[in-house]
Image (cartoon, rainbow, N blue to C red; front, side, top):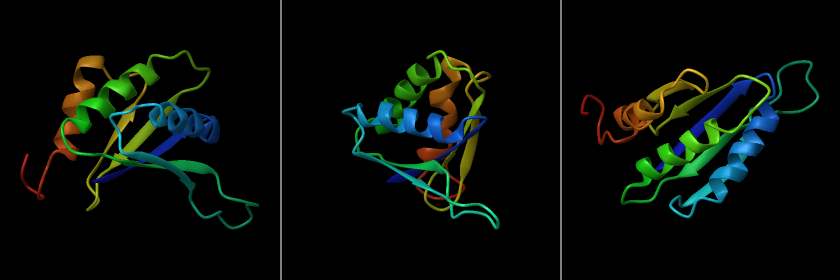
Length: 120
C-alpha cells in the first residue's frame, strides 16, 4: 500500500526533505518518494511537500510509526504537521509537538490498517 504524507509548517520544503531522507534510511519501508503540488496562480514553482511511502507487508505500520516518532523527537526550529492519507482518501493529521509517543501508532493503525471503509 502506498501512503501519502503531506508536510505543512513554516519550513515545509526543508521538513519534507528531512522526513524523506529519514524514511529512506528505514529498511522496513518498501520505498519513499518526494513530490510537490502544482504551483498556485502567481507562484514560480511547486513546493516539495508530499511524500509517497510504500508500506510492505509484515508490520510496516509499526515501522512507520516508530520512524516518525524518532523523527518527531529531533530538535527543529518550526512547527510541523503531517497529513497521512491512505489510498481511498481516509487521512489523519498529526502535529509533531502535540502527538504522544504512545498514541502515534494507534492513530496510524486506525487509518492505515483498514481493509475496507467502515472496518477498523
